[in-house]
Each structure stands twice: as C-alpha cells, then as structure tokens.
Image 1 (cartoon, rainbow over the protein chains, first blue to last red):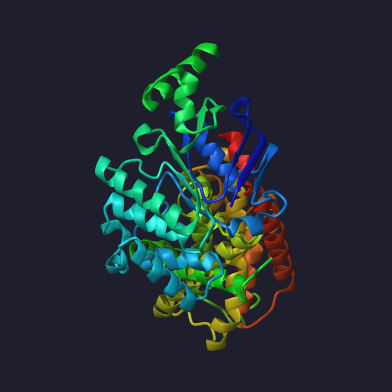
Image 2 (cartoon, chains in turn cyan, blue):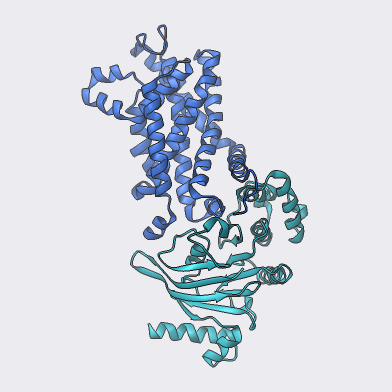
Length: 244
Length: 265
C-alpha cells in the first residue's frame, strides 16, 4: 500500500508541528521516519491514523483519500503506538479478541487469526497470560500481532522499541523487516535511534516539523558529506537548527 | 466497501465484553461503588426517617418509609457516579491508551462512542441491581415485575448521564479531574433533584430551590425510574430524559473530535 502525502501542515494553536510535508512511499517497502524527540513524528502518525483531522494538505493511501474514504483506508492500516495501548489486566487473548471485534470479526474467525499471529510472534504459549505478567519486549510483540490481526497492507510503528533493551530492540526490528519482506507489507517505522536504520532503507528525516530529506540512508550521507549515518543525522539536524 | 456481515454487531459485542471484563477485574471498584449508596440508605435514611414524613405521592399507593422513597434516587446516584467516572476516563484516554485502540476501528466514530456509552450503561446496571438486592434487607420491596419494567428506564438514564459526563469532560477543561466533576456536577445534580426529597418539600423550603430542582434533568431521571420501578409510566419524565439523552449524545460525540484535543494541546 503506497502513501502519498502532499502539502501537509499541522498546528497546535500557534505552534507549528508539521510544515508543508511532501513525500511518497512505495508499496511493500520498509521506510524509516527518523527525527529527534519533538520533530513531529507522533503528530504525523496521528494524522496518518485519522486520530487528528487534517488542517491542510492531503494524505492518500493506495490512491484513496484518507479524509474522503476513512473506513476503506483504516481497514488496511495496522498501528503500533509509542505508548503501550494494551489492557494490562486482560489476557493477551482478550486484548487481541477486542481488537478483532473492532475490525468486525466474529469470535470463531478472530480465534483463528489470533492463533496465527501469536504463533508468528512466538507468543502462542502466552495467550492466556495477563499482559501485566509480560516483559516489555513480549508486550511489543503482542502489539505487533494485534496490529497485523486484520491483515493490513500498511503497518505504522511509532517508536516501537522505546524502553526496550538493545538486544530486544534489534530482534524486534529484524522481525518487522522479515514481515515486510514475507508479506509485502508497507512499513513506516518511526524512531530517533540511528542503529535501527539500514543504509539502504528509505528514510524520511523530520526535524522541527520540516522534512529535511526523503531519500535512502546513503543519500543522506551524500547530502551531508558524512560517511556515517549518525554523523549525517547530527549534521543535518544541527544545520537546520542554525538556519532557524 | 467490503464489509463483513455482522460487522457492526461484532464491534458492539467486543466493546461490551471488554467493559464487562474490566468490571470483573475491578471488583474493589464495584464494592466501593455500592458502599456509597448503601451508606445513604442505611445510615442517612435511618436518621432522616423520623424527621421527614412522606405523604402518599405518585407512584406509591400507600405511606412509605424514607428508605423506600430514596432508593430510586440512590440507584440513579450509582449511574451518575459511573457515568461521570467512565466518561472522564474516556476523555483522558482520548489521545492514548485504550481509546486510541477503539478509534483505530474503521467504523464511524459516532458508532464507536455510542457503543462505548451503551456498554458502560449496561455494565452499570449490574451494580444497580446488586444495590436493589441488598436494599431488600431494609424493606425496599418494589413489585417483582417492577425490577423488569425499570430496566429500560435505568438504561436510558445511564446513557443520559454518560453522555452528559462525556460532554462536560470534553468541553469544560477546568473540570478535568474527578474532584472537580464531583463538586461542580455530581453533588449539585444529585442534591438539587427529587432524589432525596419530593419537590413539594423543596417548594415549602424555597421557591427558587424548587425552580432549580424542577429544571434539573436528573429530577426527571429519578422520577422515571421511581415510576418504572412501581410499574407506572411518567410521560413527562420519559420525554425529558429521552430528549436530554439525545441532545447530550449529539453534543458529546461532536465534542469528542480529536481535532479539539490537538488545538488545546
């Protein structure tokens, strides 16, 4: 599922959170949305997921206007939020069943899908445990399983590894890349951690509401004249602060 | 679009099951919600019984004890606290937590919020009936069929109070904590109604207090329940309760627009 964002701006009162964003993401691609805290990543996600209404500009998913056909579009979108949205007092199965019902699945079909997705995430044996009993990494896996339950074609992950240890972060990142490859999923992975990005990834660099770059990691290095992605990121964001 | 059969039904069912599961999980909240009206019924009413004589008034056919008089109002008190508490948490959760999950459903937002209000209302009924069961021990014994005829009245009142709660917490930012809502909404609404005293008693005390009570929708909610519990139908109370429910449902669903949340962030 492709994403096309045109002239997208968003304000919180007088404060500009996003400023005239334009980009296109191809179908079946792993893309990273990179930016320091406060860059506008979560605002962009809130707009992509219809949590906030558009103030100006447009968003098209697979050619469908998000504002005009929200129901069709949202059926194709799976989301993992930055903060956990699981109900800690309910079991893994109950959390997933709730999500399945919100997408219109009856209990029989929901149970089949839940079993499949938990299996894929190697969490099948934890289905009846309360979420409170799971560690951070496992909770994230449950959230990814939940986001994939209705078989979306676009998976949005807003800093899904925040609060996890480096090893778990790496595993989770690899896992999602594998899903992207296996299922031809379009993935947009928001992060402020450079080590979660590969140099060949499509990269949207967001800073203070501006899109500084939308090429690959390699393009970003070329643009900044730096060899390493970390240095390129620092250089471009600092340059942007100086220009402001 | 490609909608599976029963899409809306499965969605409503899922929201209701979740509310029920949360209710089961939060047993302490259930008991504390019962303690409040029971204290009123057992302690407050015992003290007031001697001071306050109740004449024969509709829908009662004989002299009644004060406990019998205030029981419908206390049922509505349970719904009032539940409605306000749940609505407040819906607004808090709007940008995070479980409401985010709810709003990711492809179904229209008005439908999701209506399901949520209805589910909260249905789960609140369990508490009301638990209260009525205990009230039997202090001789609050409405006719057996009254428990059934009161059911739709309880449901309507619960939705009305949930919608008012949602409206208030969406629009009045100063009331964004429960203490504020309790002092400025719940208590005035409850005390300035016919829940504790008949309106004619209020009129004897003060004409303007009577006027406020008779414009308070909670008064009509209590009267609707009082009549329904004794298998009678109060058309005026029903019309006002229904009208208030529709009005505040519309206003609250409109007020829940996340765009507003963004503006005030």
